[in-house]
Amino acid sequence: MLKIPYGLCDFERIRTKNFLYVDKTRFIEMVESIDYVLHLRPRRFGKSLFIDTLDYYYDLESENKFDELFKGLYIHENQTPYRHKYYILRLDFSGIQNTASENLEQGFLRRVTIDAEIFINRYKLDIQLGDANSASGVLDSLLKGFRALELEHKIYIMIDEYDHFTNSLLTGDGVEFLSVLQRGGFVRSFYEVIKRNAGRGPVERIFMTGVMSVTLDSMTSGFNIATNITTIKDFSDMMGFTTTEVQELLKLSYTNSRKVGEIVQLTNDEQVQIYDIFRENYNGYLFSEDSSSKVFNSTLIIYYLQHYLPHRVPPRSLVDANLNQSGATIESIVGLKNQEQNYKIIEEIINEKKVGGTLQHFFEIDKRFDRNDLITLLFNIGFLTIKESGFTIKFEAPNRIIKNIYMQFLGEMVQRRHNYKLDTSKQECAVEQVGEQGRIDALTALVSDFLMHTSNRNTLKFDEKYIKLIYKILLSSTEQFIVYDEFPSLQGYGDLVILKAPNSFAKYELLIELKYIKKSDTTDAEIEKELGSGTSQIEKYMKDERLATRDALKKFVVVFSGFEPVRLLEL
Image 1 (spheres, rainbow, N blue to C red):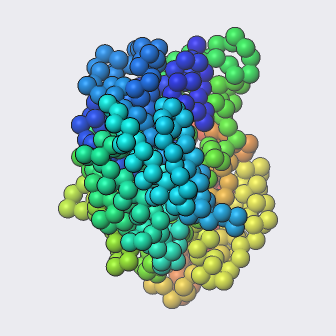
Image 2: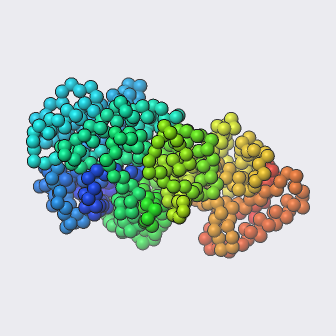
Image 3: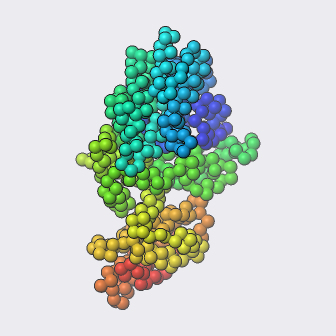
């Protein structure tokens, strides 16, 4: 029976200790057709595990482990000419941070030195690194020493999270970011050493992973030999899990991590229910215009199963805290350049649920940062994905979790721009009142207060769409509910449908129909007319079995006059 490999990226341990492994080895032969590879994916999509798989496949000293580690996998029956033909130089930049005790250059030097020493000790090579005081100097010394040994095989360089530390500098106008990448910068100098030693030198192959291409692009000619396979159809599901892979892993038997010897097998009903949760919260990533195969965030799938399997109980949070995704990630990109333009694009994504643009194939932050640059970076970090292709590409947020992060970011952004501070204690009480009592008066009062302080009173297009947006912002702080706007029923689209999340303690769910009347048009007769219209719409929505069968569903019509609620009717 299989164990859940949460947090593991050690291919040997996973394969020898009976952990779940989703076979991605069919991509090895495709990757092998390209000498220098760059592959970008959002955080925690399985990049490190894939690199570790490549390591064991190409490492010349792992040949005696081939059958043990790869038997039963695609590549075992489809071996390639370069299997176990390389010295593997692994470089991992994921842990480097810009701190008071160690700046980026010092951290970069320390990491490269450690990895160089690991390489020397791994293959017992007679190489002396000397006293180099730069990462480029350490690497140059290592490669010169390797060349002098005149060995039969060459080096395969594998770089994990190549851009992790430089991406932390993507704030302000990018001056500090560019300073470490352009001519004379310590990062560019390091990659220039790799470039000089590639091909006829001791380095024959390179595989690099990361999140954004902007770091590599900003080095210009410092490193222009890599083929970026990020959006190529053939590699679209090399990272992450496909629909078929997820459905198959739900059918497998697992060991109970809490009780030794106990086997856990999901029932058919559980498989369907859990897959629906996965589809809505972890799926939706489409990385190629030419593909139609969406993938799930693999780490979140593993995270959910790790929590669910022991006691058949969903995790309290559907988001793994280790992913650390928040509105701050969006803010750092939005704040890079042209902030006002970028804020409008974010508002467009949230209000229209999609945005049109094209993926940039090259970044020049020192010269421009336009709409398509922002869209591409949001695509790179997994906050946008391809919805459909045409003259331009239509992008959307891939799933509910990312949509929620946008809502939180928008709420914070609006408050900052209008110098308004939402009372979070009142927000928490209002959300609790919704779940515990099925009441929305406190929540609606907060919506009104938010609108009063942050909305443009002269906005001609103001309507219930904006009111609905504020409800969603206020509810985005909790994981107790799943909030749908324009919920498709048999008889129309419900403004707000607030349903319990899989891990929810809420007793009630809500259906809210919103109506808006301009202050100047508000009369008792108009209010009654809108109440009647909302009541009729809800009656139609309730003919849909998905709503009609929910026993604890509370139904409301709320009429706003301007920014103030003038009638709140529970049906």
